[in-house]
Image 1 (cartoon, chains in turn purple, yellow):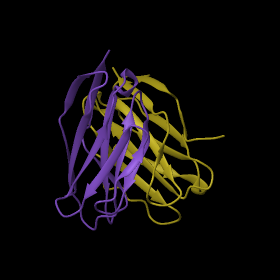
Image 2 (cartoon, chains in turn blue, green):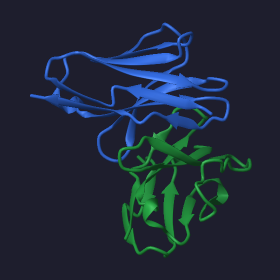
Image 3 (cartoon, chains in turn red, yellow):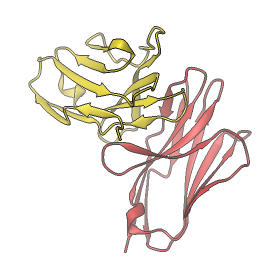
Image 4 (cartoon, helix red, strand yellow):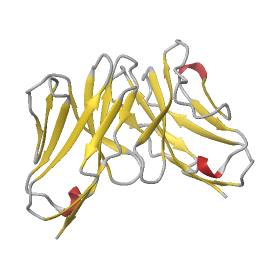
Length: 110
Length: 112
């Protein structure tokens, strides 16, 4: 059964700190790994990773995939209070449906 | 500029009643997914429609749950004889291909 495990489950930091969120996965016929940010009800897309070792960046956020070790990390530098959210990791395999982790709840305090 | 829309945004129902949740995907997206998010949980896959293929219903938790997608567009998720454990946020997502998914705002279902 496909599985995604995220850590930590929650994290509290101060503005300006750098955080690293972890995601490990087990999926049959891996296609991609996706990161989402969820602030209210609907997750919003951040990154999709398909190849190992290629970093994707968007502003202060970056992510990388290691297909050998079956994990991904999401880095946020110079955190701001607006980064407070639940960050969801999801894997997509041969069945094409996404399997989500439980998320990491990030709280950035001023 | 239409994203995925869902209705209603909130639904409170009594235990034992049936409910219907609606999803309007982005026009032209062939894939449509339903997920459920319970308090403190990640997103739980329910059902997946892709074009005219038979839907993947492997995530439906019981036979009280069913979904249809008419004309390859709008989808309805029906829950019969609702139970309190059905209380959750139900999210719909659509995708032009089976990759990046665009989520709707969700329907918060409360069963009293």
